[in-house]
Image (cartoon, rainbow, N blue to C red):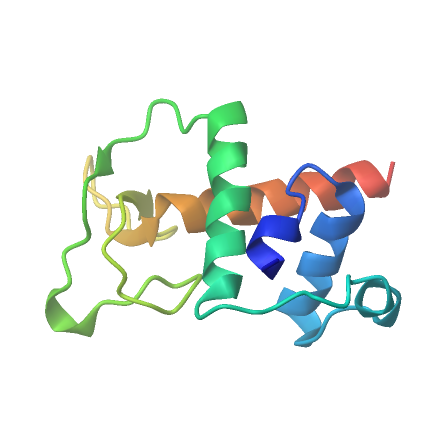
Length: 130
């Protein structure tokens, strides 16, 4: 069984462990100790898990009122500011504060799944702190 098959995106303990992996670079020890012995890690497993988490969150909290684009403009060596890749995924434009000029504003492209994943993790943290 692979980690992407075993990882339960609806399990808060799994989500917290993933958050620790993202922030600290490793799974929590208690999470590792409870992994089944036959777990394997296929190529890009971490991206697959992040995508699955973001996809569920997107279905729960759709990005309403924001114009999305099917793929990023990859000119000028663009990389998503969250995942630091130029993967061809839908993006949205997020206004850069302080760049307003009348009705115009500069914006930055961000992968929709990356933004939603970040929002989901923020929501989880806020619920934990209540």
